[in-house]
Length: 303
Length: 165
Ligand SMILES: [Zn+2]
Image 1 (cartoon, chains in turn orange, cyan):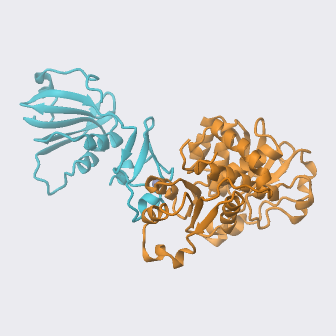
Image 2 (image 1 turned 90 degrees about the horizontal axis):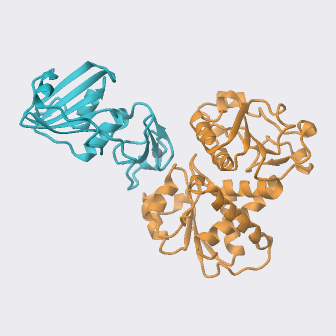
């Protein structure tokens, strides 16, 4: 396994399993028991677009392992505003830190950064591109709260632009998952991605109706339909709020169903669902910490 | 590169196939998919102002391709980079190297596994389309020919000629 963590496509199923098993061992530390595994190590966080949640999750993981974090700060106030290339910034920061977490609005930014970096790059999202640490924490949540093999999952919402779900669906295909894609017509998953998934061994069907499948699935993965992805507001209005998970919808759910969401949510999941036995989205965000601990420890050669 | 995939023909039968005058020294690119000859010229950097002796036959009936184009360039042998580019838009093309009116070497182009710095990514948000010091890189899928950007994963499957750098 390369030290860089750029795309789920770089991981085999065996490598994913190793990461998930190791994350389980980090869980007590994520809950607060002391560790000095990464003491003396420095992580740099470079966020060229804001994603406070992801940044805090990495910071928490690093600090709970006894390491330190340096942050590029807001892009407006840094060298980037003066026109420095990412390739230069990466080479400079690589002299200070043992690993770099990068979030960047351009697709492929992390792959390029890895070409220039002497320390491991961890991709925390590149535009509409990859976000492997999100996918790994999603897989970990499924492994912990449900079952990764022989599992039926429905992915709901924006399956066209939402690349988080593309990456998750790709990883699930390595487990030969049974995947139902639920979206309005205009937000269906692109054909080229579906083709890739089938080639990997996924079983795929498509529908626009959640009610139709709610009684047959083990995992309901809900995503936000993002306004900023739409060329015009009228198009967005047509599909905004089209899916809403409510207690009523869940009356037909299987007992073992779990509901996931990468967060933040807007109105896709009614707050009343939070207290049902199905809700797992808050656990899911917690699981980001042990998973990122694992990735940091691996990147820094501590495990 | 397969150099023995097409059998060598005696010079005489070659000349009979000539639609335009034979060349003494240079390269004949045959079996270009019909309609792609002008793109081949573009790849070779041959434009209206060029001084090179070039002849082009277009839409010649062909058993294999339906119709094919042929390009002949006097006094020039192709570089590997040029052959790679031609393979993207004319995957069936054959290259004939001519010396003293004789075909001294004949081979079919072969698609490379990877192609760097040749095609521009069609995703405007790709890191390879910025001022970063990065050259475009694609992995090549052979049947059907499509190109996948190493950086952003976008796929170019149609109009590859339009994306040549
Ligand atoms: Zn690209």
